[in-house]
Picture 1 (tube, rainbow, N blue to C red):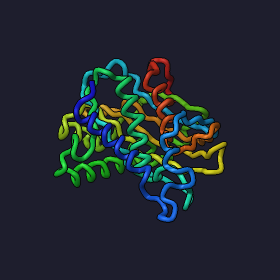
Picture 2: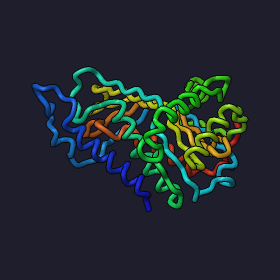
Picture 3: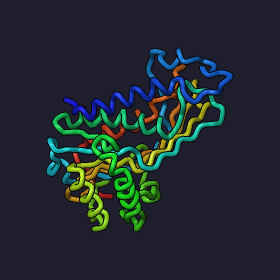
Length: 278
């Protein structure tokens, strides 16, 4: 059963999309050409994925050590880029917030289904994070992302994962040591907010391509991480980059994170013992 805080987040997510249908439109045509009726149009967004590359790193002790009844906290995406051509008419406003909510929606569903016994908390200010801690947690996360992790680069740097990515995804067993400063930063968050595990979407980049496919398309690039924060250990890291084009008349007005979530689901359910180190 979802916690009250998780339910509150779901309500916020629904309210965002209901409000966004009417928001940020030109005054001379507030509904756009297709009108808001199309926001509620029935049907699934159908996509064809290509130009795909990915890299997944999984701790081989994942299954042996993972406590499926512990508290897992999910942070919002830390670095978001949302690019859309100026004056492009889409049914709701496209923004960094829209991308973050879309990712959170799919991530929430995936975690709930993958770990049904786990207590899942949203690491949002006003929920798991007290409002008074707003500056504190933002500083903690900013510092955490700048800690070195792979190839001597900060965690937020995508270059180590771009160089390791392959089509459609390369899997590797994690066998490196997490630097002490990064372990300490994770442990500090764990102790302060009483969470065993944390998910941190480090980077999410979405660009809308209106002329791609039947009804438009987009590019996606992301780095998503799952940590045993109490122990300062990496559980799973997933880097994904792909282009998606529509094959139906439903435009990519939301659902950008679904292809990523499908791939993350495969990674979360893969037996780490079947993965070799690369």
